[in-house]
Amino acid sequence: MKALILVGGFGTRLRPLTLSVPKPLVDFANKPMILHQIEALKAAGVDEVVLAINYQPEVMLSFLRDFETKIGIKITCSQETEPMGTAGPLALARDKLLDGSGEPFFVLNSDVISEYPLKQMIDFHKHHGGEASIMVTKVEEPSKYGVVVMEEETGLVQRFVEKPQIFVGNKINAGIYLLNPATLDRIQLRPTSIEKEIFPKIASECSLYAMVLPGFWMDIGQPRDYITGLRLYLDSLRRIAPSKLSKGTHVVGNVIIDASAHIGEGCLIGPDVSIGQGCVIEDGVRLSRCTIMRGVRIKRHSCVSGSIIGWHSTVGQWARVENMTVLGEDVHVSDEVYSNGGVVLPHKEIKTSILNPQIVMNDSLQGCGFRLAYH
Image (cartoon, rainbow, N blue to C red; front, side, top):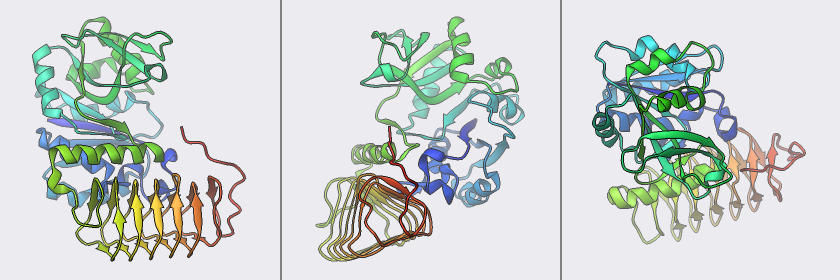
């Protein structure tokens, strides 16, 4: 069985982290984002994954070679020379996806994190006998999204309504699909939207079905949603694999700490924290709702909350980092510095407090003259 992951382009919403690696290789809960999906696909019986990518394919493949052997799955790339939307990449990768077996194939959006109930989706797809299955998730404010209107009992999709002003339903496309090979015949080799051009046609022929996603779902393509996604992911681990969570007198709530990390005396860590490989957390540190990536040092009595600390960075003694601060790779925050929502590009040294959310492009903390607004 095969799968295609829509990797896309430059990952601008997750900068400065994506200035160092392509977005799917950014760590999430101590492993690259895309590895969560590849492992779930392998567990569902997929033996080949095609990455639809238009940015740094050689970096992606080089990084994933080790995992290819370790997981036991073939990983290839289909490179776009121009952005092809969400359907065009399927046409481009047609020869890689078709193997003559007639088996359906998965398509996943690389920004999506969930419990990936892919085996259930295969059973659902076989049961309804239609051409295509999509996963949908329930949201509280459907007026912000394109809503999937469906029959509750059968899952048959009736229509799509973009940002409805009156209530028509509360289920939206979750970015996980299972498609018969016949779907490829509908897609031309040009920039095309699968959501707006292909799925409505299949729905009009009563051959598109939607399965409601059990458990959590989050698009983690920007920092605020990344932090929310980490909380949901750790909540899920608490339910389905609690042994993967860290324990100890210094841990509060759901936390994962790599075995190679060092935790000092008197720390308080959690809730909703991940600490990566080789990190050093010195005495008296307070961490909550944050990601501490590989090789980071958090010095004594500092506090990090609601933030992402990029690879090999340092947070100085008695420093305070909060309010969706994102430090790129190899950033060094001096002792007693305060960061309130600073977004700091890689290889910078911060010696002065960041009092308001801003992008920091140089060591002198001039910023770039505007504030950030995450939506």
